[in-house]
Image 1 (cartoon, rainbow, N blue to C red):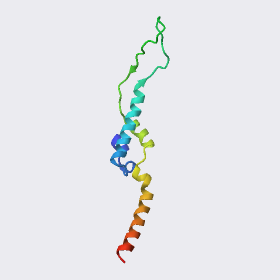
Image 2 (image 1 turned 60 degrees about the vertical axis):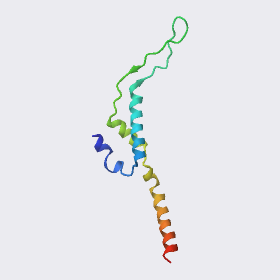
Image 3 (image 1 turned 180 degrees about the vertical axis):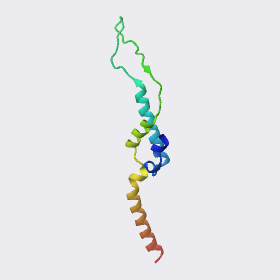
Image 4 (image 1 turned 45 degrees about the horizontal axis):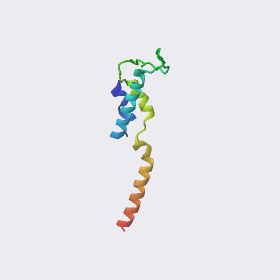
Length: 101
């Protein structure tokens, strides 16, 4: 399922750095789900805050985390492809006319 979810056109223009960002974002989503933070402080008889024991659950990275991350992460190449193509066209026109004349 995970391979199918991230294969093909959904990550076609992703660079290695983009893929790393995707994996880190998915891992962070799984981490956020695995912790349960109690923001209320409990005080002891001495009036000092008592340490709060956090509930720890296993951190399981699943396809839903990658799907969520994929909605947030955009390939750098995809975002800049139009500008990059315009720059390449301009470069071809400038250098071909200067060197081939």
